[in-house]
Each structure stands twice: as C-alpha cells, then as structure tokens.
Image (cartoon, rainbow, N blue to C red; front, side, top):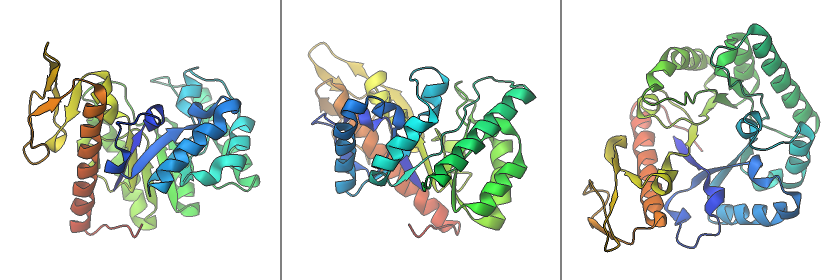
Amino acid sequence: MKIHLAGSEAFTSHPKIKYEFHQNYLTTFAHFMNRKSQKEKVDKIKLHNLLNNCVILDSGAFSKATNKVKFELYDYVGFLKEYGGQFDIYMNLDDVILEEYPSEERIKKSIDYTTNSLNILEKEGLKPIPVYQKKWNRFDILINYLERYKYISLGGLVTGKPNTSHLLIPFLDEVFKLNEKYKVKIHGLGVTADICLKRYPFYSVDSTSWLQGGKSNSCYFNNMDKYESICINDGIFYQKCISPNLFDNPYHQGSNYPERLNQNIRFFNQYERILTELWKQRGIEWNN
C-alpha cells in the first residue's frame, strides 16, 4: 500500500524537510494556478522524481469547490498537456459535492460534470485516473470504471468530523466486494484512518495528516496514536510520548515544525511498510 503525503508542495524549498525519508507524495493543481510561476514550481516537483519519489497530481477539485481557487477545465487541460508528464499519475477533474445530503439534481450535476471532464481529457490524449464520488450512490458508474480502467480513485471519503471513519465501512465494503472480480487498483482520496487501511486493500491513499507536526505541534507514533507535544521555555522540544522503536532520543533539539514534520514523514514511511506487509500476508500484493 502506498501512502502519499499530500501538501508537500508547501515545503519544497525548505532545506530541513527530509523528503528522502519517504517516496510517495501528492500535490495539487491548485498549487500551480499562477502561470508565471508554473515552470518553477514544476521543476521543484521534478526534484522529487529525481529522488525516485512517486508524485500524484490531484486536480484541485476540492479547492475549486470551496472557492479557494478559481479555474476551469481548459486550464487543467492546458497544464496537463504541458506538464502532465512530470507526474506519475494525475486525477480527473471531478465536481465535489459539499452538501451532506445532496438533492438528486445536485448529484446528477456532479456526475455530468465529472463524466464530461473525463471524456474531454481523454479526447485530448490524456490519461487521468477517474474519480468516483461516494455521494453519487451510483454503483453502475463504479462498475463501469472497474471494467474500463486499471486504476481508479474514490472521492468524498473525508467526513470533516473526528472519529467518524467507521461511517465509511458500509460503502467501502460494497466497493471492495465489487472489486474482487476486477482487481483494479483503488486510490482513497484523503484516507489514512487506521480502521480503513487495515480493513481494505487500497493500492494507494493520501492524506495531509503528516502536516499536523506543523499545525498543532503533534507527532505520530506506533498504531496511529497521536500525542500532543509541549514546548519548554528554554527552547528544548520534548516529546510527550515516545515510541522507542521509532525514536531513540526522547529530547528533540529545537522546537520548530520541520523536526516534527520529519518525524511524521518517518512514521508514515514505516506505517506504509507495515500495511504493505500486512496485505501481503493476506495474499494481496501489487507488482508496482
């Protein structure tokens, strides 16, 4: 299982972030909206690839839906035609449904937009990964994807509420039951909940959870336990809880976020290996 760390584009110039601790990352088209700086930013992403990293390009659909950025499909098409080859894979531009209980009309609009985007991208000679939205509740579309593609992604899995990952189980049970016939690679957008990754054989997932080291002074350790950290007045950063097999030195010099981010990068790298071995023991192993 590949865990792609999302949001890494924000730190491509930071000398203390150790991207070599991990191989799989995800960036977003929303980061490349300024055409004047596109080449410079893409060159920094290329550096990841030179380090033998696997970088996924997300379409920026969620940022578009929440009005954080404004762009149209033709903007994404133009970018992919010029720079798409710099990324290992890239997602279709879907219409993200933000409403908790969308109307049938809203669902149809999302399906039509997403289907049209996929068709246009493919007509342009591009090969995006199709995105199936959970709120569509249209398993006929999902089956169509499973029949036509070797790699698909699932969207709408982020609930936005704490301790609600268990609510995804009925949906994911059905998805992976259907996929037993097709054995398609499935990517979970925004999913790193332990309950999901140990229950379902995703080929890949992504999440910004690792960024909590910078946002909330917290680090991840064994079994996805997350512990708050405290900063002491003398500038020495103490970990509140230490897992010996992950961190030998309980005293981490410097209370800055890069050290915490690096710890989280190391954690997810180890967690990825643990999950890969777990699914291998269960008889599921991917060749690449």
